[in-house]
Length: 279
Image 1 (cartoon, helix red, strand yellow):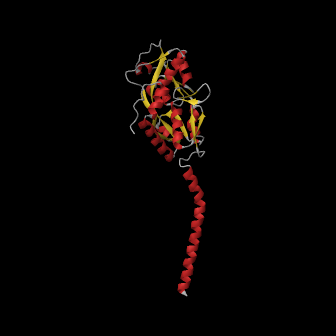
Image 2 (cartoon, rainbow, N blue to C red):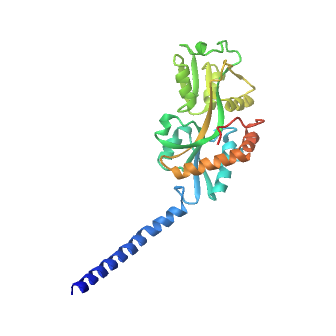
Image 3 (cartoon, helix red, strand yellow):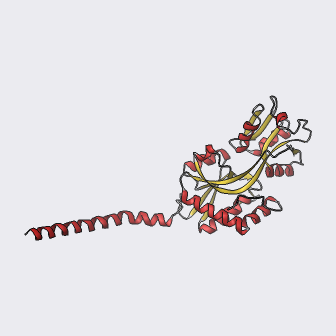
């Protein structure tokens, strides 16, 4: 009697356990399949949605036909092909990119962001994919000496892109000067060329593009050492380590294979890709 009761008890436990396992499988199976089908946690499975500010020719811009083009775009097309997903580029003003990423409007922001400590609190970053140098632009008639001390003076106004690394550099390197920011680099440079400001901090290639379109009206102020040589990274939603890991592998693959150099040289008009951090 005791043995029979024990056997019935064990049988009941086994039956109950089987039901729980089956229930757990039904509950977690679809979720597990969905995760496997969307391993990088894209907001729309099968589509990589990228936030960009397409006004930084030749790094990223729109053609006369309205199509995205430039260095970043070439790499993104290669990335989407490697990931076997569709590429959806959303054009947005620079200041709205990180908030948009946080609001899950994008999977990725591709605008050459420097991974500063403040930005790292809000989003996650990949390794570097684009090199650039910050320069100070002034008119050719400028009489301010090419020294930090001469530019770091009350009465001097230096413009930059609002919310950018450029703005941070102006405030850190020229704290005595007046920092004036604008929503785009072209406006910041126009303030200088029209005499409303003494100088502007921008990426070197942006100054080059501005001068091509404006009869070389500005010059780079040649300091004894470069203001800043930096690298830009992709930004993704905070904590999306799976996508960061994939991006890092992709960047290193493009770097070592020569695809990155090919894209840079064909879009930037440079003879070679500047030295990148080693993979």
